[in-house]
Image: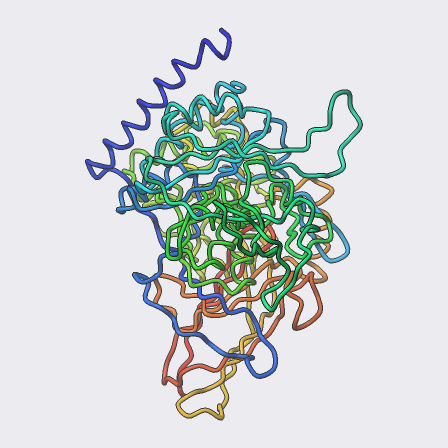
Length: 615
């Protein structure tokens, strides 16, 4: 069946899926967004402002959001949280190339490695194109439908696309937003090098611009004159001008005012390799492009959203122009790049949130479900069954154990498992492999001290959601679930000293080391694993991408009041390392709990929690 013949079913199925979601929202079945962090951008400074801490706003007063997860689930949660008819502008730049390479280049001191996509990214991108363009259209229809629900009555949407699917996508947009609300097909023309091929060089993208209603928000925007204003031959205290005649009246037209922007934009160039704003993110768009769109279709304090956030350009520009913003992406590399960019641009405070389903802890399930889940985990890890014994499995010369989600893994339990490893059914195994969703600090410490005999791996948070979504057989066949290594961040003892400011004190926090229990579990090819293993031996902190501090951790939400990241080299002139030490001036207290969070180049998080008190 041709794609044209499939379109009625695509629309029908997409509309049904969207309406089922809206019904689920009305009945209260949608999981809320989970707030993982409150981030007040405050990168390491030098000179007079070194060590300064900004005021921490209350969570309920923060309206900007960076959200990690599937945007279909994110939009459901936003609608359930009262965002229906609240967003004035949505800009999206969805994936539109089925042959795109979703590897991410990671820079290490003196080398580079290619990070493979993680579990959620793998499923997301493969599912989009599994049935060609038809499956892409099925995937995007309910998302566009929910975007319309989120738009205010004066709101509008800009959909950035190219020749791959643009002509089919417009049919869906006409169906969802109405042909009568189609405003412009904007052509963004640019110059860039391309490989020699038959036919004309492809050098433009398409941006479809729709409003929700006829009463849409609009501000005139201007572009420079095509001839660069060569005919502006007069000049006064306000600048260069020429005489203009309108309705028989003569007035001055100034050069800097420009001309009203047309629907073909060739005055905004593609980001060149030397541009200051360039981040090396494949789909990054120029800030000037988003600036024109945001100025035209939103006002100060409007909410601007981008559900394919990418490198965070939409949110960065919205923040600079005084708008509130929501930016989301399913890719962990994207979220990390955005987080660093917002900090680097000294953005307003924002919430870092995740979708409930991707962090749905398996402990919510019944004990009888665990047997099935354990069997799935064993098969995903590639183990061999042991006849009549369900609790253990084997893989080469390792004994493999999955921690029951209804029980807590303790050090005594680990010690007992180690004795079983040495004499299990009359056989001695070289290693004990532990698979668990989380590990306590005490257990983590024990595992790292016994890393020669224990390999501890983390089961991905997304496993249950993927099992529900794809089913047992598809999940097993995919071979795309990745178990990640258990990592450990160590810091040096926190130092306290007097401050020259009344009722303040100085605390000094210094990183010590960073380790994995197994680099074999990292999402790398064998060649790159060797590079990482060498780096772990010589320079383990070289793997850290970002670290931040909560000076008064309450044990629930991490409140990031200070941050540093690798590419920010204003302090130590070293773009491949975070700074290892900082001193902060804080309110003097008899006792406080300090939490340090680090994220490595693979997106894996580690935390250290320390209580400090007067002696």
